[in-house]
Structure formats: structure tokens, C-alpha cells
Length: 203
Image (cartoon, rainbow, N blue to C red; front, side):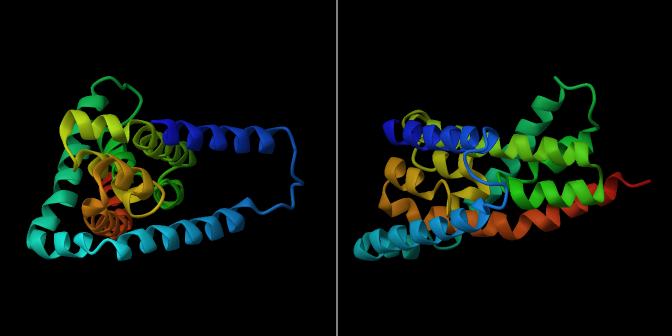
């Protein structure tokens, strides 16, 4: 929990720095964050490579690994359906498109913004950022309440990168490979599912 709070505090600090002009407008934070992510993935890779039990876990799971992203897809859409009942200004298909981002806020928001509307694109951005933040904050609790796979499914597509360290810390190194596979599968599926759902909304 402490690590999650520290991550959130750094995010808030960066947000405030941007809002109050601490850095010049020419500063490209995206490039810096991309390199930081590369370094993070390198360090996580080292920790997985040192622990050979992680590779043994991959071999033992086999095709069962595919059930994890499938469960995430079904669970996400079920959650979207339940949440949609509390909304009045979105079509059900629009809510599904937002949910189909599975935490991949950068890509899903762009696709939705270009194929549908900027308003729904912003909605997708906020909803999927919140999914990532909730996973960062709640991963240890999800593991205690619902089991080792819960933080992975909560993270969605982000389970292969930004939330992977938190997931590994909460669920253990044995689940790092599962988390990576889960995130990669959802990352691949996001553009196809979002585009398909948006296309079905067209008259």
C-alpha cells in the first residue's frame, strides 16, 4: 500500500508541476516517461529472470493462461453493463467501447475520439486512467480479498507494464509471467474490440 501511495503522489506532483508551469511548454514529458518505462521493464525482467520459478509457473499453467484475459474481458463487460444502468447520457455500445479500453487509455481514447467523438474519447481516457490508478492503490487488497489473479485482472492491459511491479509485489513473482501474458493479449485485442464496437454504433 505504501508503494502505491508513493506512486500516486509522484503522479499528482507531476500533474501539479504541469499545471503551474514548472516546466516549459516545449518539455516533452512523453519521451521521458517512455524511457522511464523501458528502464522499469528492464528491472522487472531482471527480477523475473533471477527467479526461475516464474518460468516454471508459465509451463505449468499452459492453455489455462488464456482463461485469465478471457475472464477479464467478461468481467469488464459485466461491470460496464452494471455501471451503465446508472448513466443516462451514453448508449450501451458507447459504454462498452469505453470499457473495451481495458486500461489502455492512450490508444483507446484516440481510437474512440477519431471514430466517434472527442467527448467519448475523453470519457475513455478518464475511465481507463482511473482503472490503472485503482489497481495501483488497491492491488494488495484485491489479492487478499479475491486471490492472486485479482490484481492482474484489475490491471487489464496495464498488467504488462505500468501496474506490473505492483502486481508482482502483491501476487508474487510466480504470477509475473501470467500478468505479462494477460497484458499482452489485452493490448493486442484493444484496438480490434474498440473499433468493432464503435463500428456497430454507426447507422
